Structure formats: structure tokens, C-alpha cells
Amino acid sequence: MGKDVIIACDFASKADCLGLLDKFTGKKPFVKIGMELFYAEGPEIVRELKARGHKIFLDLKLHDIPNTVKKSMNVLSRLDVDMTNLHAAGTVSMMEAALEGLTRPDGTRPLLIAVTQLTSTDQERMENDLLIKEPIDKVVMHYASNAAKAGLDGVVCSPLEAGKVHEACGKNFLTVTPGVRFADGDIGDQKRVMTPAEAKKIGSDYIVVGRPITAAEDPVAAYERCVAEFVD
Ligand code: C5P
Image (tube, rainbow, N blue to C red):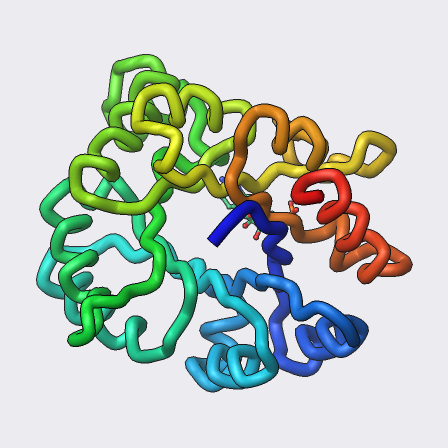
């Protein structure tokens, strides 16, 4: 899989999600299904979007004991998604167990990506709530290296970190980056943002774009603008 734009389908119902996706009559975009939509609609929404021809990033961010994560990943592997994820904070053994669970009997598996530190966690919260005293950049890079060591395919990170992740973990280690905004668009609640063109320049492999597409007057045009800036 090469560079692509992933639309974050942050909806509370199948009707809202299909309301958006029905507008795409040509190319079927790669979509991200997160906890909100998955918990509202269950695995059926994955099957339905897959049957409609979409590639799927199932963003459920697993984090539990290795055995539980392994068995849960095994269930998710049968949903035939293209990419899924977990928290690197679950440790290298948990990530290794996840990979094992995710690998199908024929040896194929979806891409597995780790979340390092959530962008909602800043230095102060990490030090005071989690008692992690190292600089947050170092923690993010350490978690990325742990993910690479466990054999994962990449990490979710800010586009601003994508270059450094590639330097530390190799250029084939994927960077999946949210926090993307058009140069002339609203940044909303995101703090550190980049345009699709900048994300391309810095070497992001996939950009995850939500509201700049889903809340646009013309979502198809907004998606095509992302593709033109990031992929073409
Ligand atoms: O609407 P917006 O483009 O901000 O959506 C970004 C998507 O990426 C959302 O689904 C959000 O939950 C997700 N995300 C993020 N920052 C992270 C990890 C995931 O914005 N660090």
C-alpha cells in the first residue's frame, strides 16, 4: 500500500456515515472507523463498508494484557480490515502477542500500527499523572522503537514527528498522521497541524483527515483536494 488519504468517519450512526460515503460515486476512499461508530453499530458496519469497496483502518486502540489482546486481534483479523492499532504503552510483549493474534492462518494480516503518546497528553500530564519524567519527544520515539522492535508496521504520530520516526525506525516504518488542515481552513481543536502538502514533504505515509472533509460543504471536493496535495 502506498501513500493515501484516510477519511476519519467520526460518526455516531451508520446513517450519518453512509450519508457522507454515498456522496463518493467514483473512487472509494480509505476510511477510518473509530470507537464511536464501532461501538454504535458493531462489526456489521465494518463488513458493510468493506463490501462497498472501502479499505478500512479500524481505530480501536487496544490496550490490555497480552493474552486478551492476542485473542481480540484474532477476532479482528477475521473482519478483513486493512489496518488496525493498539497502544504502545501496553509493552513490547503485548505488541508481539497482538501481531501473533492478528496473523491469519495463511500468513496474511492487516497492517498493525501503534499509538505512542496521545496528542492530548502533554509533558505536564505525563509527568504528574503517569509519573513519566522523561521529555515527551523522547518517550514518543522510545515507544516508536518498541513498536518497531515488536515487528509492528508503524505508528500514529503528528506529521511534525514523521521525519524523526523515519530516521529512528527506518523509512519503511509507516507514519500515519492526523492533525491535517488546509492552509485556508479552520484548525478547530487540533493544536499542531500541517497541510496535506507539508505532510507529504515531511514523509507521512498516510494522512487521517476528519472534519476538513466530513464538515466541508463539498466533502468529495475536499477529499480530492487532499489527494491532489498529498498523493498526486
Ligand atoms: O477531524 P480531524 O481531522 O481533527 O480528525 C482527526 C482524527 O484523527 C480523529 O478521528 C481523531 O480522533 C484522530 N486522532 C487525532 N490525534 C491523535 C490520534 C488520533 O486527531 N493523536
